[in-house]
Image (cartoon, rainbow, N blue to C red; front, side):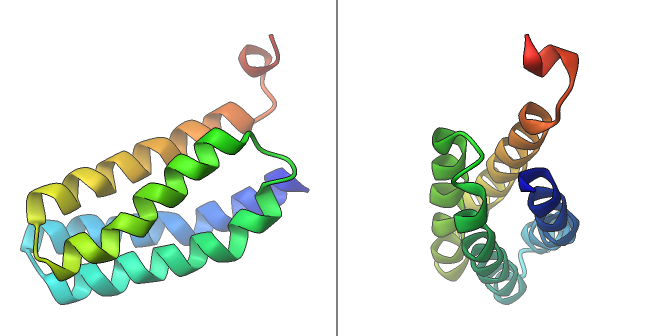
Length: 107
């Protein structure tokens, strides 16, 4: 169930990551703010479904990073915003890879 929920989240999150990265490259802070807020709302809607099944530390790290993004975009801090987007994508992908039932994750 948790993998199914996480896969649904991933399908929706990846395009938002791309939007956030593109907005940072173009220094389009209004689009960056909208995309960051969109991801935060998406994350908050799925986080509660993942808590019972996924390790808590990675979830907290993703939530913390997602919570910072709208503020960074609103304050037009392009360098920190772009770095936070990259960190968020990395943590998200790392969590996905760690939750897939593969031999390297089970040992």
